[in-house]
Image (cartoon, rainbow, N blue to C red):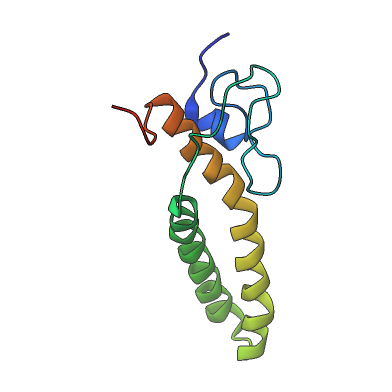
Length: 117
């Protein structure tokens, strides 16, 4: 069982121990155990961390794109709404699982979970 990068493992949404089993049983619901190695994933609690990181990444991207489009094409305000609301939603929803995977993987790697002495 080769130890891979917790960041890559998390981005792939795979088990933090074996790197093969699926981490999620749903969109953001962490599986109770890894189907490959049997790791008990009850320790996994990333809280609001993934959402914060996603906001810090998506917001500057969308703002920069909106400013660029505004400067180059000067579209009316409703075009900005049509462009940037869906872009923000799609980027946010696409990035949440991998970021949650990274945080869960980091929790496992650093043995940072409740009940740990």
